[in-house]
Image (tube, rainbow, N blue to C red):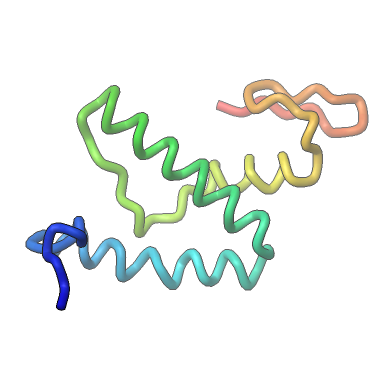
Length: 98
């Protein structure tokens, strides 16, 4: 017994395909980089997706890896005291992120 209201992708084939593509992508991230990077990327991307809906009334494609976001998440994992906009921590390399 399934409730069609519990699945946000029911009736939207494009979004279902997007989810079907996103699942292996996330699995690959976890295998390559470990749970922390996978989880941090997922949280950061979902926050970015919510922001795009609120500010631009548009949806991000979850099936496309945001490589810039992945690099930022990986760097924050290596150097957690770094700023997300301008990284200038003495123990880390200085890197300007857009």
